Length: 252
Picture (cartoon, rainbow, N blue to C red):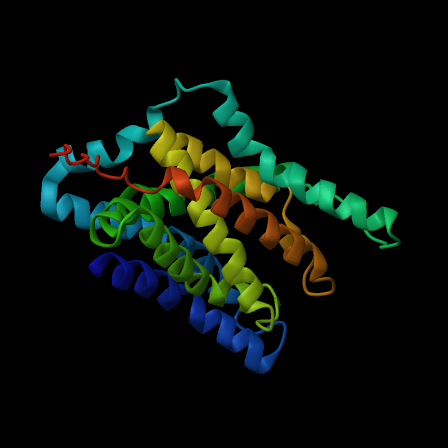
């Protein structure tokens, strides 16, 4: 799909050079390229708007962005999007603390981190769920399409992980984390029709972010991955297309 080529190309072209210099030559090298690396976060947004504008013009771009303004949904969706995964993460870590584990049970960001989370979430979700999700669903179905998107979403993050000094050994755990999140986010989008709620779900992942414990402690990431995978599987029935009605043959 051209979207993924453009999204990955834009992001990785801006992020890989600085990250590579930092990894090869150590801290203090490649820092001049880091502002470009930050701009790489906008790859999915740039890809979605570029392809939509080319195919459908300004009206198409307005239709792409319109679900960001769809906010009239049940309060229960807001609670699920913003707080449920983070609360389950804290609950799991608290139980482990009772069993003897040491360490935080929450990973709240500073105020600046919340602002960054909002910008990142909009930049990603317009592309992932606003543009790519409907097209993958049309090709593979809602469940498989969400799974494919979760895998690609994980791979897209690799330069960011490396630049943040996050080891790639737990990449399978991250795959579980992002694929579960992709299923959950697709369910929220399908249930509300609101891209705003999906953006808030993405922000919610940053409000209690187990990645803050990396690279020293991978257990919170594992717990968070299990939370998202469990939630994703739990709501996956809501992604399945309805079964066609069957008619029983009349007895002769």
